[in-house]
Image (cartoon, rainbow, N blue to C red; front, side, top):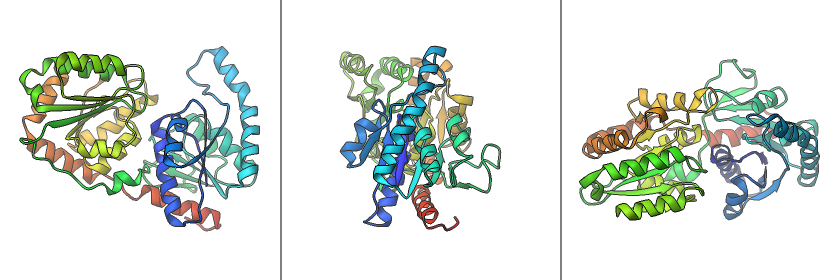
Length: 361
C-alpha cells in the first residue's frame, strides 16, 4: 500500500491508522508513505518504522498569486517524481489522505493503472479530494455525504481512522481528590498561538484552584519557550512540549482537554471518551471545525468557546466550574465515548484489500 499525503497531524495520523490496520491483516503486507520534506511526516514516520519518499510540491490555495503560480509549476515535476517512486515500489493500491503530496501521487498512480482511493476526514471536502474523486476507485468518508460532493456509487462512510493506541487504551478514571486534575492543552501538531496565550491568561486567573491542577501543554515550536517561562513565573505544575509523540498516553492521563476541533482530534477524543473544551479554528474552510465541535456539544459531551469569545477569565471560569463538578466531567466523558468509532481503520484496510482483489465493498 502507498499512503500519500500528510503535512499536518489531521492528515497524517489517519494515514498511520490505516497503515497499522493494513499491516495487521497480513505479516507480508508492506506500506510506503509519500509526503513532503516540510510536513509532519518527515519528523514522525521514521520513529514509527515507516518508509517515506518525498515530493517537491506546495499548496496553491491561500497564497499570493506569485507563490500560487510557483506551486502550480511544480505539479508536473512532482508527478514525474511520483512516477519514479511508484515504478520503483509497484504498490497494489494507493490511498490519498489529504495534504500536498496526495494529489500528484494518487493521480499518477491512477494513470499508471494502480487501484486508488481517498480518505476524506471532514464533512466539507477540500479541492484536491473533489478532483481526485473523479478518478479513484473508492472514497472513504468520515461523515455522510449523500452525493453532495462525491459519487455515491464509489463512497463508503467508514468514519475517521484512528490509531490502534487510541482504540485499545484502557479507560482511566482517577480519584480527583487524591491526584492533580490534569488538563491536556494542544492546538494541533503545530500548536495554536491563540489557545496558548488564553491558557496562560487563564492560569493567572485561577487563584487557589491552581494548586489542584497539572497542565500538559503541546505548544508547537514557536511558543514553547515563552510558555515554559510563563508557567515557571506562575509556579504552575506544568509539562510543556513542542510536540507530544505519544498522544494516546497524554489523552489517557488527562481529565480534561482544551484543543481545536479538527476531525482527527474529534475522532480520537471520542474514541478515548474524554471531556473537552473546544476552541475551533475560526479560519477553517467553511468553518468545519465549529461543525465538528457542535456534534459533541449537542450530545452534551463537550463545551465550545469560539476564539472571538476566548479570554483568560472566560476559560478560567469554565475550568473552575468543571473541576468543581467531577460528576459533570464523568458524564461528558461517557457521552463522548458513546460517539466513538473504533472500526474505521480496519474497515478502510479491509476495503483496500478487496479493491486489490477486484472485489466490491
